[in-house]
Amino acid sequence: MTSFRTFTELVLERTAELGSEDAFLFLPDDAGGAVPEHLTYAGLDQDARRIASWLQANGAGGGQVLLLYPSGTGFIKAFTGCLYAGSVAVPAPLPTEQGQHFSRVTGILKDAEVRAVLTDAANEPEITAWLAAEGLTEVRCLATDGTAYGDPAAYTVPDLGPEHLAFLQYTSGSTSEPKGVMVSHRNLLANEAAIQHAAGTSARSRFGGWLPFYHDMGLIGHILHPLYVGASAVLLSPVSFLRRPQRWLKVFSDHGANIGGGPNFAYDLCVRRITDEQLAELDLSGWECAGNGAEPVRAETLKAFAARFAPAGFRPEAFFPCYGMAETTLLVSGTPKDRRPAQRTVDPAALEQGVFADPHDGGPARTLVSSGVVRDFTVKIVDPDTRQERPEGAVGEIWAKGDSVAAGYWNRPLTTTEIFDAKIADGRGGEDAGGWLRTGDLGVLENGELYVTGRLKELIIFSGRNLYPQDIERAVQGTDKALGIGAGAVFTVETDREHLVVVQEVRLSAVGTDLRSLATGIQRYLGQELQIPAGNVVLVRPGTIRKTTSGKIQRTLMRELFLKGALTPLFEVLEPPVRQTVADATATSLAAAV
Image (cartoon, rainbow, N blue to C red; front, side, top):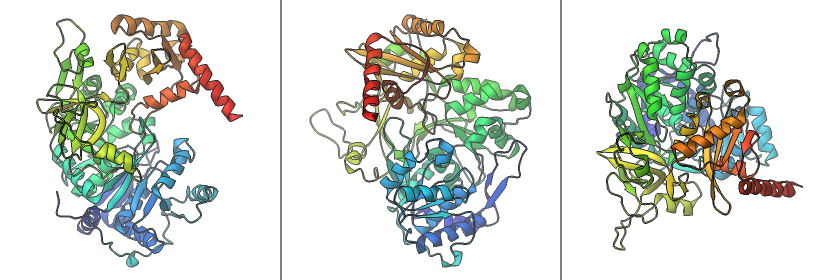
């Protein structure tokens, strides 16, 4: 930990020390190569003081402030302004960029009891109209990209302590409705220290990222951590990365970035989309820490990326598989620097029974990638039903303790007690003192390495077997090479019994028009290779599978959409009981809408 009591104190000192040095460089989404936007530490300080003075003068100092920005330095200034004001920042996706209109942010706005909204001039009119339509005329809205507001000289440093909230991180909702994680200054400082310990960052680090700024990895890893260590970051928008993945890698090649990462799909996209000509222009030899925060990390992804970009100087030792979540502020574990990620090949049948075991000679095998070692937390593997600690090498729910663990969910005391104050049973009727965070993730500790195997709520219990949906999804995509470019979701539906449902994206230009043969091929493969009766296969257009902002498949949401008849299939094979269940649900929805 640092000597600072709050993150606000730290940033005030960094801006005073580093003045004219670049804090951030933002690359506009311009194929022609627009001029990068520089933001110095002094410039950040001046704009943050102006924003903070406005918040303090308008009754939002110490209250919740919603941030709605496109990717750019405007968000960074606004978040820092909230820190300066002692306000509680509430980062959220800009509705006009998400195609969700205002439905999600309306829920966040009301749940968080927001006092003000900060945005830019381009979006201020629509956001003001939205607030009026919701009857929230008392909530002020400010476009912060002008200068005709606030007086930097009128700013006063707030009296804050470690337990004051720094921000609310609303979860992306991979398995449930979004909830606001209460991150205090103590939590934030502790987790930034944990990231520094795990990744070996320093003032000489230069970060390169594209993740959404309102996402925990984008915010804490690519914006706040550079401020924590007094470094700099080169950033671009998610849209810029998705359109031209080489732009992210050129951040390491052309701008001297040496640390940055993303989920599995980011590395997969680079492998698929970056051409030989673009590869020849890259120099990735300076990339020291390539984070991968997906759960679980795919061995195939690491192997394919390392092989593809070895000619550009990328080293497999640079990979930094890690594990964390909003409830722990961000990082829990990470791979030690300059060491290849540990991998463990296990028997899938034994894994279904909750045990790590070596595969039989010539038998099926599954390779898991370690999410690194735990340093700044206490982590235990616990049986989610009995709440007894599991032995080394056994699968259970990951439970964690540490200064980085948040206080709970905003305005949800019962859920907070259930998730953040769990107790471990000793097997003799007693319990420990509690205070454990139930992560909802399944994993194994072995030889000091943490292996994440899946999500507890998404584990499929089918015909007496514990199946991980990501394993089945991967198998489906392996039946046809073209399917590997689309996402899939696997879940179960209950009628008189459990039925497995496979929803898979397909590109007609890649797979052709004989979708019946493709669907029956998927059924045949799962039956023969995995002994899984897949009676229900739904082939859909690209973009149908819902994901969180970090790229995780929202299987629970996909199941809900399927049962509501809200998916538009290109082709489907459904068992009669499942088809009837969907038809009944659709009829009920239509009747309710009349």
